[in-house]
Image 1 (tube, rainbow, N blue to C red):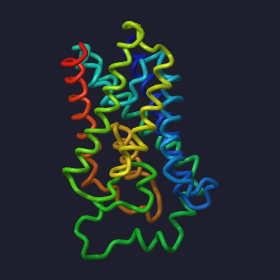
Image 2 (image 1 turned 180 degrees about the vertical axis):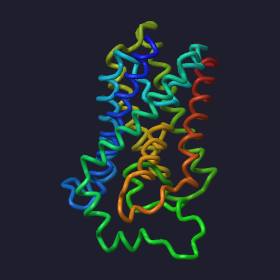
Image 3 (image 1 turned 45 degrees about the vertical axis):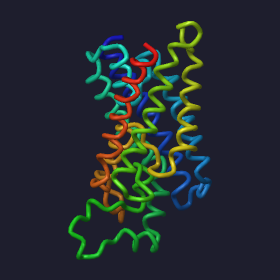
Image 4 (image 1 turned 90 degrees about the horizontal axis):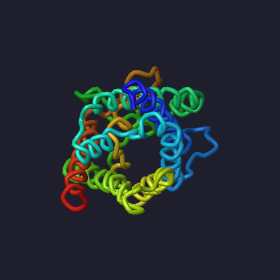
Amino acid sequence: MSSSDIFIGETIGTALLTLLGGGVCAAVTLKSSKARNAGWLAITFGWGFAVLIAAYVSAPLSGAHLNPAVTVGLAIKNSDWSDVPVYFAGQLLGAMLGAVLMWVTYYGQFLAHLSDPEHIRDAKLGPEDPHPHDQAGPVLGVFSTGPEIRNVVQNLATEIIGTAVLVLAILTQGLQDGGKGLGVIGVLITSFVVVGIGLSLGGPTGYAINPVRDLGPRIVHALLPLPNKGGSDWGYSWIPVVGPLVGAVIAGGLYNIAFA
């Protein structure tokens, strides 16, 4: 795969991932959405299908990493870091593009939701608050993840564990069928893994398990002209970036120790 193929594939694939994944969060969350209050099952399966579609589209070009944690895990497995920066660049750009497209799709719903008096009140911070940009706004959860209970150690551990499960499941696919791997069925299996992680481990933090899936849309949230949107919770933002990368390193190391 050439560098241009990798960059284009990861940009398109990660854009589809965040468009569809963020889209299900918007559908469930926003006022005047037909799917409002559909619940956690809708979100977990929506993200699983987002992975399925994005990976099928981008796999012929880039191998469909769509996630810096996956890229790091594969680099550790293969001892090859040469294409990592290209993967990272495409993934971050794609995540931001997907978030913008999601906002366009739900533009009216965002306006309706954020003009609701209840949400205007929630978005307003007291004058005594010295760090307004560190507060989570009323629609930040459509773009990025956030913890139900703010505990740095637990939140970080949750992201590390969830990502380690994801990356290890991806790395071991190559061992199946006598080392031939799972082929195209691997995309479906990975999608089910993402759903399983969401159902089992997603409750504490919203399971970013992907640094750009969280960071790209969070940047877009900070930049978009959304009225009464509140802050982008930058004080928490490092956890869904660092946690998945640490989880990827653990998974890559465990693979080399136990399976290589």
